[in-house]
Length: 333
Ligand SMILES: Cc1ncc(COP(=O)(O)O)c(C=O)c1O
Image (cartoon, rainbow, N blue to C red):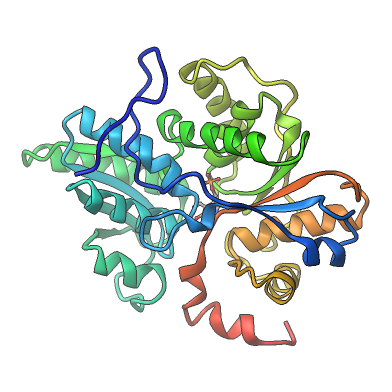
């Protein structure tokens, strides 16, 4: 059993060190040159290299969420997401590492091929409840319903919202901002994929400034900007930080036809990252964030001298699916 450690002084939830932090911060000289950045301006924060069944950004949130669940005497984490959810896979791994059960509501149909994240969900013994199609609000309601149902059978459930984006989970990205501030060039801006908004909100609180964090919306939730605003207020209070300056920076122009759409821009971004740096991105999240960064650089919204950190949030398992693998290898895309 891993040790629980308190991270802050006055009453905040404890943290269970599950993620293997800090993650590396690495320069991207060849990608930087290809995009016309000055030498030493472009960096990557490797949050794809956390622990938990293949890694990714949810590990930082789960350190706080699982510690909170244990502190409340819970025995089962209940969460949900899309059928290829990285968050569900990592919540299942965190539950196993802490000796808990995991129940997850997935948007999709029970007959889906056990590939990518679904294969890992099965390996991790996550108990799946299928919710026909992906709809954020419906899945959040189904998580609550599953908790109510489980509680009548003597189980002590702990609800983990979509993407782990509760104020407690979001604390994990305040710590990430502190890691970046301690290692990256002064004044660096961070580009991140934004789904449920917890990653962006935590970074903003950590930096104390919305302008330091540029979210590239992947289209997972229609109201993510409002959610970020609410989360920022709650997390600043929980982490005992000052309310940040500025307002939410969110680029909605890379969603394409909707959440998970495979766009030509993301195809180019994934191939460029692989060819220049050996960096592997996914098309639903991390590839969209890089496509947003590239578009800003090319349109002059990001200056050549501007120190910039690309946050690699993970997502690798979805490449190993019939929907994405062939598209990725199609040079005509
Ligand atoms: C790989 C990956 N990157 C980014 C995100 C978005 O993070 P957030 O939900 O905190 O906005 C997710 C969310 O599921 C993800 O799986």
